[in-house]
Length: 393
Image (cartoon, rainbow, N blue to C red; front, top):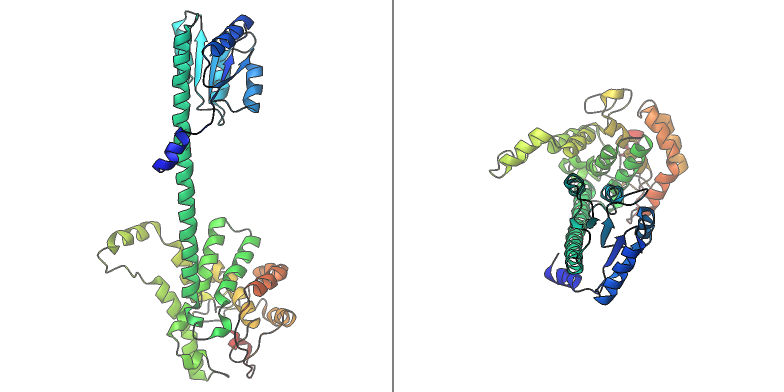
């Protein structure tokens, strides 16, 4: 907390409130006269026992409690125990008054968290001094809490800022492969959202959901290694061009697996941390980049993996990527409508797609269409010959 905030709290107009608890009416009347005589700079409430004290605590903000120790039914120790075990009042200053000459009982009260002890009959000046001390303690505690809350807010704001920067950076990096064409400028954003939806409906843990949302936009990072003449070709690819195009999966995986800090002097500690803890984000991103063109029946590339050999994250992105590719304008065709897209993808289910994940996808079509509309592309539509299904991405 800065000094201005600190000073404004110390000098605010909040009037402290003291709760006095005693079952003897003559004691309560005496406290009332005492507080009025000395014109104490606080408000106060009087309770005839623990039950009434708890009612007051529920209704009012209390800054300090002064309680008799021995009372019928529920005594001061019960009140103290209740306060110390309740998060709302666990640090509320409590002064215990007792006329019992029992050192063990007084020690018990202190052990239970009593702020102070006073013996009856109470000297008025001493009582007022102890209350002032308790209220000062409460004010200091409130300042510490306020500082903590302020710090937590700053940390949360900074964390949210870092997360936003991280997400923006990932999307920009993922979009690097598409940057040379304005026709799919939100493709990676949509794929991230689609993949998150599927992961959520699969019942995956939050860490997995967060990671796939961040990692899936990097699925086509390897395309930055492919010549523009191939990526942006307005028509079918030749056999040799297609061989080059297919290398983007392996290239992307290798880029994301590379230990870029390995030779950097300042990177030694970072490498040790990554080696010890692992970088789950890059691991998942590399898995997705390397396997998002594998197919459920083993006919995909680059490794011909099949079924569960394909990482779960990649099996999710395969569906998200294909859906968005069909629904987007490309250099060789216009976007395809949602109905026709579903028909085309159903033809590939159990061959190209994991059937269990595909079932989740079909249940999520309304969500996918919302995402597609929310992050729709703004670009030129160029029509060309529609080629074979493998050319959709």
